[in-house]
Length: 230
Ligand SMILES: Nc1nc2c(ncn2[C@@H]2O[C@H](COP(=O)(O)OP(=O)(O)OP(=O)(O)O)[C@@H](O)[C@H]2O)c(=O)[nH]1
Ligand SMILES: [Mg+2]
Image (cartoon, rainbow, N blue to C red; front, side, top):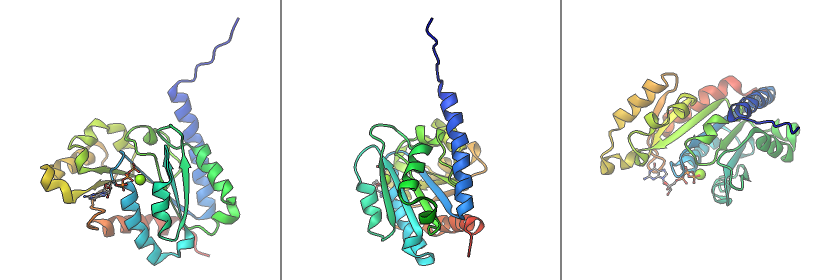
């Protein structure tokens, strides 16, 4: 008689959530604020993070900032970010469409664990470009920032209600392109709000810098609550 154990996606997701909560406790014990950026491929996650890092480096020393990028292949994004003088790490998932807690945990330990992380105040994780999988696998971040861009289609949020619902902050990026594409941004904004009234929705352009101030203020508000000052 062969015993068969079938793991359904629900079990895997639940176990990941448990591990993510433990990771959040670890971040809290360090007084480190963790942000996770999620969204479709090419929506502008790295570009927005670069603009925000420019702001963060005016309030923090570059050595207090850590960026972890998850991509299926290449170090393109982490190389882009390393130009800002902050710690950057690349995780290549080798095909998987999202990062998982054990990968992040292993990365943090490899960097030096607690003694290293005690010097970090802000950690930014960019997940693999995907509108579905990463949203089901939280990484313990204090805020999950969903990035959708106007070129992805006006109906992005209603087509992805689960992803929209679990996000803490929603950014509609590339608004500089909206007039050329004939996109109704107000509709996108109200769709997002209807699905997730808990999450503020920001309009942004990582190209022109539009909306970056507002997003930064919202991230800093959270940072002030979490970061432990010596
Ligand atoms: N016009 C315009 N282009 C943008 C904007 N933000 C990003 N882009 C462009 O969109 C492309 C993708 O931007 P990235 O920042 O690499 O997007 P990403 O979400 O990090 O992509 P992946 O990591 O591959 O999923 C690049 O060519 C950017 O220059 C924006 O606000 N407006
Ligand atoms: Mg990127």
